[in-house]
Length: 133
Image 1 (cartoon, rainbow, N blue to C red):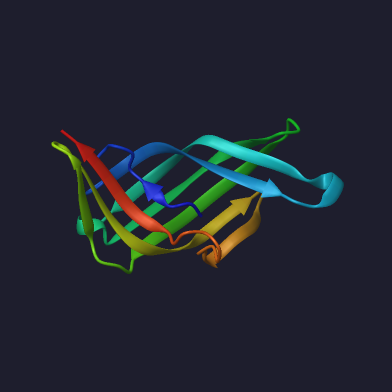
Image 2: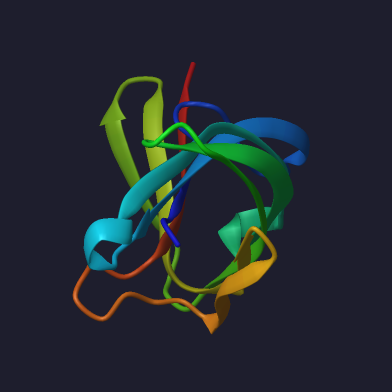
């Protein structure tokens, strides 16, 4: 699972629906393909001080061969580190915490991820909000 980034909009407290994308890759020789649901609607809920974030939703994904697939996700990020605040310039700041990621992602009814989903060779997941005035 990729980390959550509010991308210049306050996330705390965020409740409601917004569009986010999910991507996948099926490897397997001749049967390999990639897929994406670039505007998958998600219900995102976060706690004060970026302690946790959950995202749930479902969408139709399209693969690079022209097929369509039902995808769903129910994922959460839980903070494990201190809240770090960075002032980028006057009126612009970032708040971020290191986190762990868990959840379930399904593709055409098949479970792709179920449980902890912290990638072993990529940077740790995080919860972040960027704000500008």
